Image (spheres, each protein chain N blue to C red):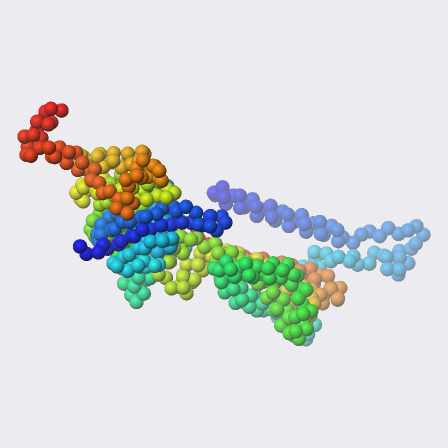
Amino acid sequence: MSPAFVRVEDLCKRYPDARGRLGDAVFEHVHFEVERGEFVAVLGHSGCGKTTILNILAGLEQASSGVVLMEGHEVSGPSLDRGVVFQGHALMPWRTVLGNVVFAVQSRWPRWTREQVREHSMRQLEMVGMAGAADKKPHQLSGGMKQRVGIARAFAIQPKMLLLDEPFGALDALTRGTIQDELLRIVQATRQTVFMITHDVDEAILLADRIVLMSNGPLAKIAEIVEITMPRERTRAGMHHDPQYYRIRNHLVDFLVNRSRGYAAGGELAVLHNPRQPPVSRPGLAVEEAHEEPGNGDVPRLRQVINL
Amino acid sequence: MTSRNRSRMQSAALSLLIAGVLLAIWQFVTLPKPVKLPPGVSAEYAELMGQGKATKQGFPTPAQVTHTFVRELRNPFYDHGPNDKGIGLQLGYSLARVAGGFALAVIVALPLGFVIGMFQVLHRAFDPFIQILKPISPLAWMPIALYTLKDANVSAVFVIFICSVWPMLINTAFGVAGVRREWLNVAQTLEVKPMRKAFQVILPAAAPTILTGMRISMGIAWLVIVAAEMLVGGTGIGYYVWNEWNNLALPSMLFAISLIGLVGMLLDLSFARLQRAVTYAE
């Protein structure tokens, strides 16, 4: 098998306390991989270091130990290969909407002519439906529109991997839904590799191919990796008609509510848990597998249904 | 008429009223007083003793000052030798000194403030010097400046420089240090080169704070130039005031003082406008 596109090995982060001594790790033994074209979401409670992991992937923070490899090279600092959509949009308020995207495009292709830059930037804004507001200043936009511009700016540099840090956390439910749909459409069209932080279960199911579940911090680790077995062509409107959806959702909510605490040292779930090789589960298929196991063919399955 | 317009009109009317009242009070207190003669003293004798009706009141009347305004403003740029120059020329000398000192201060304070703001280590290293030098009255530097620079005019410029530099330096450092982490992160993830980051991210982000510092500096510089020119003499609006004081020409002094206020206001207004131009809403 060829090496993974992005490979995270034994990542650990410790912050110094008030006296400058290193305290307990926020998270440790974090191992996972991201394949090219894959959408990976990280789900976990506040304080498990999700944002720190993203910042390390972005190159904005240094890990206390462990490495991140992208295409076999160690990530040692920020790079145009990895575009970031920040939690609080992070648009520059003195630039227009277009100006913000232009700033990114000029950084990526410094030799482009003014026209090329402008044309490419406008295309990005069109993609998120913000071309009409190109000459507005960020403060004239709603939160959702600002985040759209943030997404356009991140896509504009055509990064090898897109990092999303709870991009819709501050938006109202309605706006969030619309932008999630747009992001889904763009990601499906571009086959963009995405790594996203979220604490919204439905958002994770809708967008992700795999969901990395983090146990609670401090000493957070990857508890489990959930594969979303629903077909990739999902829509927010149609997703809940898929019987897999509720199984996955229940599995994730159950984890967040009950199990995420159990991985601390001495916890009942920690005993057999190996954070270096977290279990991979497919809750969407769980029932089918259970039904198919004893039977061979349609008849026993029917009988089973009747017996119920 | 909108209510906003109406309230503006009301303010303007009130301002005019205040001006009228002040003028009336001025007029009243400078009226020639009827002379009360002690019993047994003839009016003629009193006049001979300098206490009669013809005695001038010390403070000029509004009419006298208006007369000076008209006379001086009719020909503001005449030059009749070192002690008799038009008010326009004198103001020009002062403005040139302020501009020179202020420009020097910008050249020093902006880059220095930038690096101090960016590096905590430098900030802590420079802080004691700034804290000690800042509260020194700019005029206290004058003797040292005269001794070392050996030129009155250059010394005046130096005094303006030294008084303008501190607010600019402190505000630039403060503004640069306070640039939001997220904008710097954006620049970092886009691999923006240091110079481009300085001019296209940090400078626009800190510009409102920097301009506030410049505006404060300009205010102080205009206060200080009058005092400095009283000391160094020769030319300038400060020297003009001092010269008219020596001539006991009070109407001319009042005229010069009003112009100092007016020019100071215009300087402040222009910086306020600049400040508005670089301020961004979030």
